[in-house]
Length: 360
Ligand code: NQM
Image 1 (cartoon, rainbow, N blue to C red):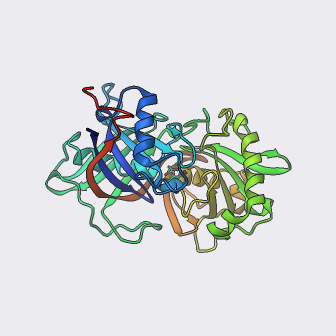
Image 2 (cartoon, rainbow, N blue to C red):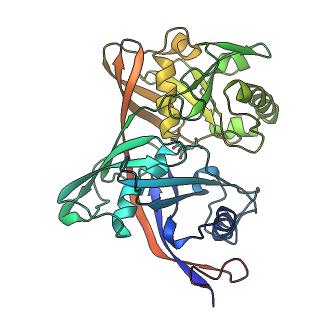
Image 3 (spheres, protein in one colour):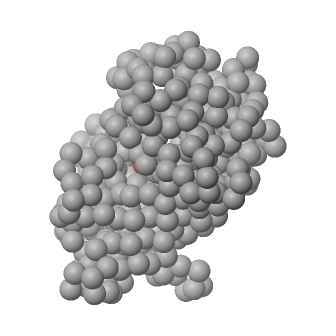
């Protein structure tokens, strides 16, 4: 008989995927990944035999556990599941899936919700970044209906407030891993930066673009994508990321002057497909570049002023507001709003040819 793994299928921000408890999955990483790949239907471009949505934003998983070191209240391990590739990558952060971690943990009985609202420190195990997350929990249970709106999600929902500290150099080791605010690779100027997500920030104009092209137009531009990938493979070692030919980082954000009253306009490659909006820590990192004098983003941005600034990052489906707490020109903390929703609660049967369950 197939072993059935308890699973919560959650939307987190503009992404979605199944959440599992670490204790319900194999402890061995290779076996765990084989189970996840089979649950998601990978490798297969359609993910027809699994839960994956055949796009990077819908081919993600979250794995939850309670840490014993006291650094956080909840551990969230994020997995970017390859679609055509048999790969579960736990390298980068994902702030969108993170938004669903606390409600999922309460739904699963891993954490007890407080009366009214629940605030907990959630660590993304991938990089050690800790976020303070607050969700609405009347009667101690998460609610999903509400009035908060985020672009890229059609319906309003209950707010998930996310606050980040210490995101600098999450994977690249420091905010500006090359030590420069601007580098030039193959004649293209860029700012290589990591404030929660390693990103190559490039002016759209440097690649002959306007910066307001649709994701479909950019996705169809195969010569542009090949050029960006060549730049990415050269930039990654300079960002301390090594060979990234099979890694989803760094991301590439093309920036241009804002068009809708925001701080900056963006189009983001993650890294091979174009994001229909922008990732959470991707947005934090681009906002950080936008307020950094000398960066390629600063050139085109409306960076605002003062120690507390809200930057509206324009993206293909609207905007993403990031509140930055600054000390001079240095970003000390970031706060932002997401929403999340429980989409389905159930179990995922695993073929006995892959795993027979914890007792076997
Ligand atoms: O940057 C997509 C997403 C993400 C990542 C990506 C994210 C983040 O929208 O924190 O949320 O960049 O691959 O889920």
